[in-house]
Length: 184
Image (cartoon, rainbow, N blue to C red; front, side, top):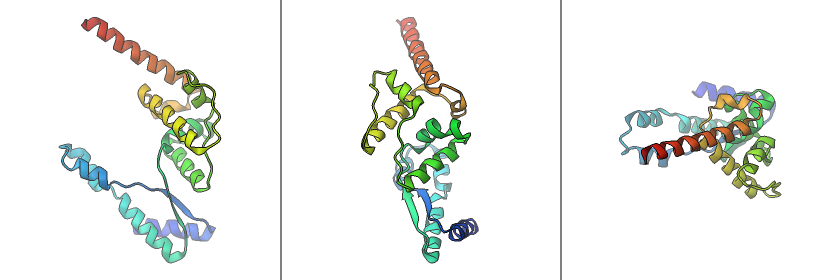
């Protein structure tokens, strides 16, 4: 891993740019899962080397005089899926990385057409927020609707993803209603 970090820092040094990564912290998560009984998940978290990677990266960057930007990871995947997977043909991971880079540069992620359509279908009026805090709230609502629909990441390449999500949510609600009716 040190070789990978050294190569990464060398490229950043040659180009003359900073490095931006998500500011992830798994200490609290590890502490709560230690006693949860889920052996597989505990092993996965224990084997996760992100903290070592970040530590090596910060030390190596300090030695070479390169700035490391620790970016808030909130909603990077959701924003990347809605805004950049289809338009640039990126995977969900690369789209999230694009959002991280844009945050490091100070850009605010406005809602795109698909996310506005999704929010409008649930009674949200057309909102064009002027400050970042409203964008965060709206993206959080989009994220909840995306999770509620249980749509896989691969489907975000399809046109009109907001319509697909709305259809899936309504279908799931109808299934729940029919199960309740059968059980009564």
